[in-house]
Length: 99
Image 1 (tube, rainbow, N blue to C red):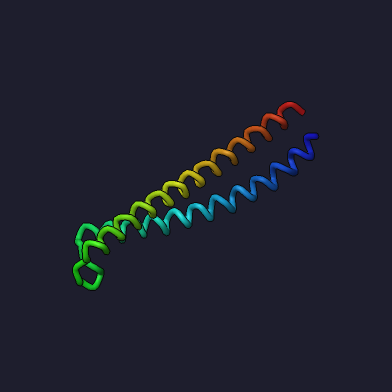
Image 2: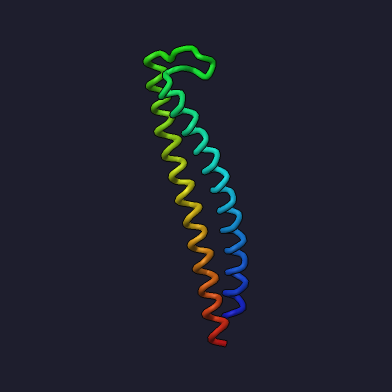
C-alpha cells in the first residue's frame, strides 16, 4: 500500500508541478492584459493616441473585468497546486516515519 501511494504521489506531484507552472504563466499573461487595458481605460485613448468611443470604452471595461476574473482563477489554481504538493510531501513524510 505504501509503495503504491508513493508511486501515486510522485505522479501527482509531477502533474501538480506542471499545472503550477502553466497557471503561473497564464497569471503573468493576464496580469499584463489587465494592466494594458487599465491604462487604455484611464487614458481613454488607443495606444496610437486616437480617442476611444463610448462603445469601445464600454468594451474595454468589459474586457478588463474578464481579464481580472481569469487572472484571479489562475492565481487560485497556482496556490492550490502549491498547497496540494505540500500536503502530499507531508503525507509521504508521515508514512516514512511510521515504517
